[in-house]
Image (cartoon, rainbow, N blue to C red):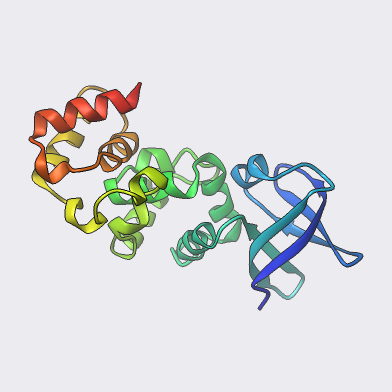
Length: 202
């Protein structure tokens, strides 16, 4: 209904932003991650929004990018995850970490969100894994400037390197993130990928 709100940030708490749009103060529900990335009061801000209409309320949920909004909209399609649960998950991990967690099956990372148990976290992974592409999880300017994402999506050396990192005690999400940020994986063996990923961990 409302695609975005563009105005001046009037007030900010961990879960709510008030944006002044031509003299109207609009309350927008936000995640803790979004709150940490917003400018100070009095600064211009643009939030892409999801509109939730209930019998007793008209609520807006805001995000700094369309990408963040899209992952939120996918989250709330999962049974047991409403807008409140979606924001809870995006408060303990940013949208890119969530994508990595879904792709790598890291239910433990998702279940760190308040009110999200292991079973619900696993349901998020099962329901959304096929809806998240590798293009969604390859992030950052450095990665975008590299080779085509699809060419290095699921190479054997990538999978082996991720498993090796996990066996060394690293989380599956951070392991997948580190390996996916390496350029030219298709021209490297598993050992080289692992070494490159370990360098990115430090």
